[in-house]
Amino acid sequence: MDTRTDHVLRTRIGGRFVDLPGTIGGIRAALPEDRRADFDRAIAEAPLTEVPLVAARWGLPPEAIAEDDALVDQLRAGDHSRFGPIDFDALDAADDVSGPAT
Image (tube, rainbow, N blue to C red; front, side):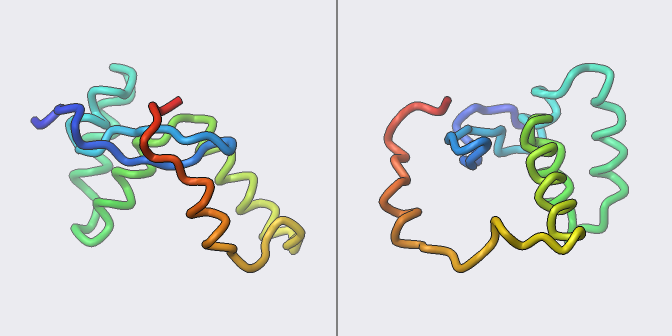
């Protein structure tokens, strides 16, 4: 499997940039040993069109999953207070992709 470190996905978690593994092999290698069989099964059983989504979810650290779940719970409860139009110019200005991941 490809576990090269030059393939990464950059996202924000808790307002900070984080680099995540960008290959199936990289995601698998980053998982604790006791979760790898479940990951292998999830990837093997995912419809081909959903493999990127399944892989991306497994590649997230627990704090990112908790952050996503909290946002979904907030929306399901009807609370849209943290949601509104996206200011893409502000996001672009804040994106400093040249620095190291934290």
